[in-house]
Image (cartoon, rainbow, N blue to C red):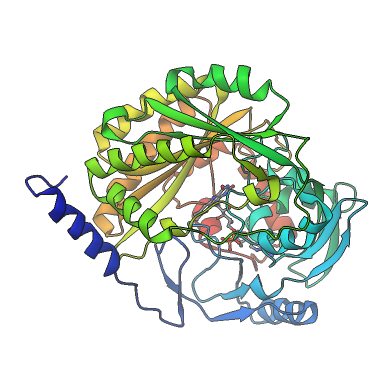
Length: 477
Ligand SMILES: Cc1cc2nc3c(=O)[nH]c(=O)nc-3n(C[C@H](O)[C@H](O)[C@H](O)COP(=O)(O)OP(=O)(O)OC[C@H]3O[C@@H](n4cnc5c(N)ncnc54)[C@H](O)[C@@H]3O)c2cc1C
């Protein structure tokens, strides 16, 4: 990092870097995703609005031998939502709530709706989502198509909260899909990355909203597996959990803190209180996060500030609904030629300390700019064909700041492949919605049913009408 500058100069430098960081130009025919990697020209971008329109579009593309990719909020980072010269269907306008049964605790919703839109509907009825990502900005279609997971440690990965959905297939037909109807398609399309058709609407199982008291604890990486099993999983009142590893030089991958959301049944639900996801203090937090991004000492400052913040959150009360929509605006970043990219590794609970120790060594040797690691839990669930939870797993969500230049990308890919070898050596897996750094061999090792997945893809879509960069990269010959 930069040496020999005064603290005041460094803070000023960082401030100007934040204020004047420029946004890349937008070409109407060029499309990319949250990664800003590999932009391509597409034939057209169509807003999905009505069922009839989507059927017509699928038939037209099929006749003209065009390709279709499906997009939600496009927060995946591996070209999962576009393909060169293809049609991109943007589903975000296809977002109506179709049916809500508070007694039966289910909701049927069009796939372009966001979790936030569902939360606003169900909150006044004392109901809540079973599983969602940490943020509520994503679409339902984009989330179930990657089989997402979140902070709830009792409900599993997202597939378990889906009851059924309607799928617009490559033939332009609509199929009802559930665990009993067209059942083969259920574990293929969920976690299927838009390759089996357009998910039109989805019936989700809901759970009760609850009031939680927040507790937090500082601990060492070495003690985390024991702590998680004995003090978190074993306590049925802890419904949600997240932990954070230090990336500060003084305590790099040694210190952690954990945050638990503990059920407090004596506190009444806040039916009348509107959910408030307006982020407070974005500018100062963004400034501190930029210090974390730019300087080693900034990482120390940010880590101390984070620990302090969570200390002040001790014993605060929060509803489940409110907790399922954490802050993210402070991490938004738009510097030309650079981006913050996610990678995520799932490690069996008992293997966690050993993996982290090896991971630490690789990160130091490769000199990567790691900004953040959070840890979540996801229990063993192999229902989806492309399932990542082959055991009870701790998920390490890692945010790196990287240069987007070709040379830097080659080097970053090499580093990530080294990490993945360590993941595989620890019987772990990795998450597919992020950039395609893993080699095809690593992909096939981690996802042993990928061959079956691609074979079934050709059964349901022999002309490969539905495609995207992720599919083209990993399908093999
Ligand atoms: C800042 C950030 C934080 C994140 N946090 C988490 C987290 O806590 N937990 C987690 O699990 N993930 C997390 N993710 C990953 C995120 O869940 C995925 O990228 C998710 O796919 C985003 O939803 P989306 O609406 O942007 O989907 P998109 O990126 O638009 O689409 C994802 C995939 O779904 C397909 N798809 C979309 N809609 C449909 C449809 N209607 N029918 C068929 N296929 C469809 C697309 O073709 C694509 O393959 C995070 C990502 C970011 C950038």
